[in-house]
Image (cartoon, rainbow, N blue to C red; front, top):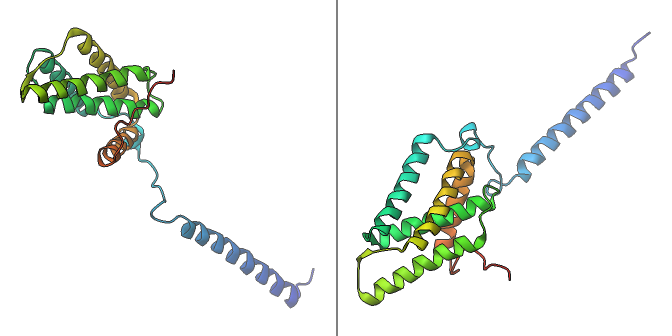
Length: 181
């Protein structure tokens, strides 16, 4: 079959057009992904749960804070640490890791707030204590958080930290919604 120069020219034109269109599509995809909204792919480390040593350190610090508070050695820093654990557990639960009722989180918030108010009224900087019912509330939250530390991918904790920071910088009274009646 003879090859005609016109056919070769048409084929070359079609190939250039297709290559050009593909190149334009690729460049449009890149341009459409604005750097502010573009998401980096998650690394293997971000897709796996937190390493055991880091998870253990976090867990231990929370349980030590609770034990100090239970024994009457609580203070504002320890209360803040337990509320931090409460909020992180809440945010990670919202990502699908846990099913503790919202009331438990709200109860923990109320316990911490009442403790702070009582301490403020009495002028105490330390020596705060918790009753056993309050201890069991925080124990349940810390048990959930321990399970989350073992199973939830690291990127969920990083996102929870960002949510916590946004809440602390905002004006909302609580990141936990009121229970539905």
